[in-house]
Structure formats: structure tokens, C-alpha cells
Image (tube, rainbow, N blue to C red; front, side, top):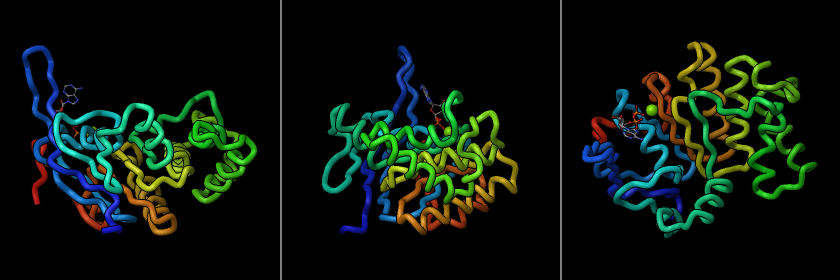
Length: 225
Ligand SMILES: Nc1ncnc2c1ncn2[C@@H]1O[C@H](COP(=O)(O)OP(=O)(O)O)[C@@H](O)[C@H]1O
Ligand SMILES: [Mg+2]
């Protein structure tokens, strides 16, 4: 099945603090298709961010597999995992996590430079994608000189500049007013269609979730249908 990008199989995760074990995720199973837009919803503390960290290889589950192209991503060593993250994944957070000392253009260049792109070519590509998200006139602005919606657009440009297969977004509109949030979300939908990228997006906004292909609902660390 070539149209499946990733398969999560029996993912389980607990946090251990001294003698106290907090189970967070239990028996998580789902397939993510190429170019699919998957919403993840659930009340606060249900395990959404933990799941996103696991999908992004930023945290390890205690059990389970993440199958991609016949490989269990959880078997990758640190270097391979870092390479996979840089080349195949993009991340967008609730708070933009842009580097404050750098311009919008420099922030978007960063993943390209880390991936070994030539500086001139990196600037070109970063400029192109910033134009695409409507920020051609803000290239030299630092994050503090941008509005909340503009910062999220820069963060989104940074997430997709490497043309990743998958973008993971944890409440990307959670810190924006409703109108700006809807605009940023429309941008994600547009990029999904134009770039053929899969998106997994955590949101509290059920209205936004209904605009996506499919919704996973987490309750106490389990998927309910
Ligand atoms: N590093 C950690 N150590 C201990 N418990 C944690 C840690 N991270 C998250 N948790 C717990 O795991 C549960 C799920 O957290 P999280 O995935 O952040 O939920 P959500 O994103 O859905 O709000 C919460 O009960 C939280 O307290
Ligand atoms: Mg969270």
C-alpha cells in the first residue's frame, strides 16, 4: 500500500516519576495516508502533545511501532532520527518558537542550512516560501516586529520549506484570535493541497477539525471512535 505514509501500531507511553507511574497513551493504532489531513482532538491532558512528540521522534514510547516505508522509525539511531526529522518532518507549535535574534528569512533558512543547502540557494527557497505564505514584505523583520498571525505564518513557512512528507502541528491556532486563526488554518489547508504534504494537527476547535479529512479523538490516552 503505497498511499500509506505512516502506521502507528500499539503505541503505549507512561511517565515514571519515582514510584509513581502515570499512564498517558494506551494501544494507539492508526494509519496516516499520503497528503491526508488528520485532526487530533481531546480534552486537556488526554495525551495529544505526547502523541505528537512520539510521531516527531522527540519522545520515545514504551511500546509499539511507527512504520514508514517498511521501517520501524523507533529503530533508528539518534543520527538517523535527526536526519529523518530534518528531511521528512516539519513542526508547528502553539507558540511560534522562532529564533528572536534572526529575521523571518533567516528563521526559514535554518532547516535548509542544517540540511546542507548552499546559503544563497537557501535564501532563495526561504524567500519563495515566505512569499507563498503572504510575507514577501516582511523578510527582514524579526519575530518581535511581526503580528501573532504573521509569526505563525513564518513558523509554517519554516515547517514546510524542506518539503517534508509530514507536518506535525500542535494547536497552531491556539494562541490566535478567531479570525487570524481561521486565516492561518486556511493557509495550512492550501499548503496541504498544493504540496501534497500530510498534516497531523492538534486543535481544540471542532469547527476546524471538521474541515480536515479525518479526526482522531483521544480520551484518557486512548483513541475512541
Ligand atoms: N514529562 C512528563 N512527566 C510526567 N507526566 C507528563 C509529562 N508530560 C505529560 N505528562 C502527563 O501526561 C498527560 C498528557 O499530557 P499531554 O500529552 O501534554 O496532554 P494534552 O496535550 O492532550 O493536553 C497529562 O496528564 C500530563 O500531566
Ligand atoms: Mg498539549
